[in-house]
Length: 601
Image (tube, rainbow, N blue to C red; front, side, top):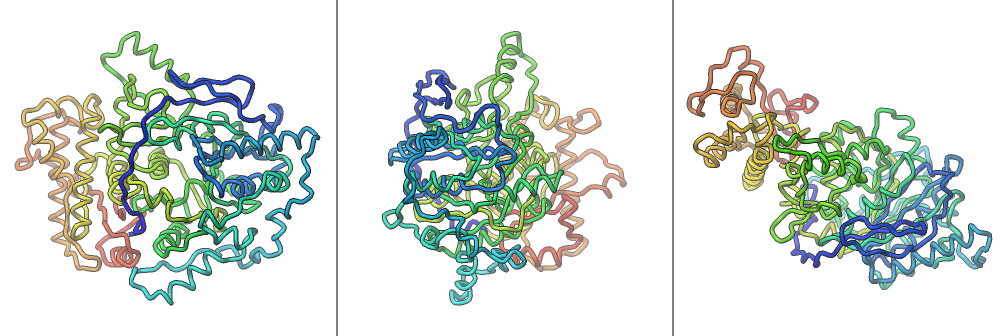
């Protein structure tokens, strides 16, 4: 599949400590009960009367030696000065390799330069963007990084390597050694003076720190940076990657030209460690250009690197918003608690981990255990990466993202990369994430009968995970009238009956791409799915008719017109492009635009 290079390794969570944060002003702000008060690390490089047009959020933990080049590439962004410039908000998360000290030194040097007490940077090397003469010809460079997908890992290396080289070594605004080196000991970081010299007019740096809450501080750092962001447009940056000099201007212009887009992303170019599996994945991702392709591709893989995007603040607020719940037993104290929660800062990011046998959101410093009134039904059924969680919630909210055809994000690869080493990035965890959002609110399988067409262990795994996700969703929804009201949970039979019904609603169909499927065979599968769905509606009272007794063997009567109009959600569990192409060409009535046919991997 597209995540073939991701391997699961055991990840030992660090002991949880209190969450702390501070502002880049004269006061320190405590953001959680028991949080440590931290001293101010840096002065704000921009004035409050001149808000930036873009805020870039960057979490950082032990990012040396890549950090200086990364920060320099963001501060060197051009074309934004007339609109207020760009602010880079770096939140250091417990670094022990000198990252935090380097950031403090840089902030001090930038403040000195802004105050007219310029440091001596006369011996600094030319800015990265002096290499503009080596850029791709604009007439030929609109699609420089996209290549036809590789169909098999067994493809001969001599056929694949030239394509990877063309993708990775296209002319860029960065010297080759900054792109190809992946061994830390061979990479010489920029000096503070170098970064000061590269800063474009109007751009500013803000530095904050946070202590990790639980095993990870990434989500907590992102939420803190978002809390301090002042711009109407929100970007992101990983602390070891690079951005070409006008990338944020291009993304901003893409949003201005596409008013229906809530976010604009870009294609990606890989730098550093050269591995064919990751190249195949990025080739697929770079091909997902239109909003429709990105939305329908999300159950195969994430359709864009989150870090490559620029998002409207209004969209980020929608991602952050949790649906309000009604608690029938809520009293006056509960109402006060709800009002208090509404006044809390927005948190668009979740950072889900399994800690002591329970899923915790380590990005929520106030309520990581989902213990508060109104949040208990939002507790996720599993744990998975921040980027996968973000994109699934994004599309579940009905938000729209597009992609510009240029490669505006340079993603550094190296063996110790978290994408390759963290257990929550494993294929199993990613599949559970997709299964959860397929049946959750806003998902295409929500409240529907599902057929999974596939073969072998892949089919078995998807069937198992989707049934488990459905049962988990019913348990969360048991107090509501929308999906699993009390009647369904108070009937005799209990969990065993619900498991039988979940098995009927999620049908596994053994199928190989291109194999003929007769009209009678398809009708038989659809009739079994229809019976299961109507049985569920009668058992739960979720339909328009009052609840009544029904069993899988004796479903309630349905009119012929209702039978004719019934359509299940069909999922095809095939990750390879060749297999998907066969399905699309040969499966009876296949129409990916209908919302009834989905590929999953």
